[in-house]
Amino acid sequence: MDRRIGKFEMAHHGTLFLDEIGELPLELQGKLLRALQEKEIERIGGRGTIKVDVRVIAATNRDLEKEVEEGKFRPDLYYRLNIFPINLPALRERPEDIPLLAKHFVRKIAQKTGKKIASISKFVLDQIINYDWPGNIRELEHAIERSIIMTDGETLQQILLPTKRLITTSGRSENQFVIKTIEENERDHILNMLRYCNGRVSGYKGAAQFLGIPPSTLASKLKRLGIQKHDYECRRYEGPAV
Image (tube, rainbow, N blue to C red):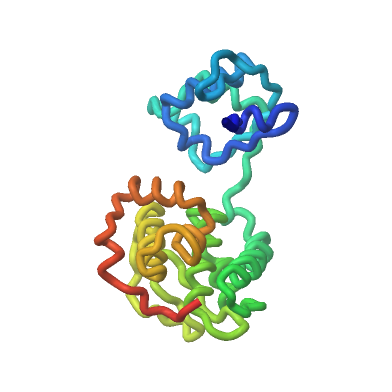
């Protein structure tokens, strides 16, 4: 029978990157803390401990100090991880990075969706530079992905920003200004993608593939956001085919 080797064991004498550490449930935080303090782990189904030497890099978009105060994150784990903190300024504080990031995402997403979009119009660049991006880089990527799906041609001429349904080169919004939370925008985006994929969650041309996340992560998001099958299977996406 094949051994099931976990991430810590695979990263022995290397580096393990733990993304979204603020999302880790309290019951798992204790297990992670023991692995960091004792430098040993127990394999699932194993009978003993295994020594590991791993450098850990953790990332989060949450305020962990606030999470600690609210009892959502263990203080001992926080101080164990907070040895050499690196604070990355919000995207709105470094607008000079936005055009470079936007061009990177356009190339990446155009290739993934089979579109031949090679450039971004000045109008779109002005819009994304002047937007405050409360969801930072991930929000920028999702906005560009939504816009590419709705674009024909070789230039991105319009941008679908979360707070406005559609901003076109005419400068007019098709709908009135709508205020939504990041979670509401995430739910709307996932629903639109599921409808575009005709309810397919995983597999080839499934929503998880287009969203760029594992199917298990998408399943967790569906549960957290309260998205049921009837929310997206009763409607079909009417946008252009990929």
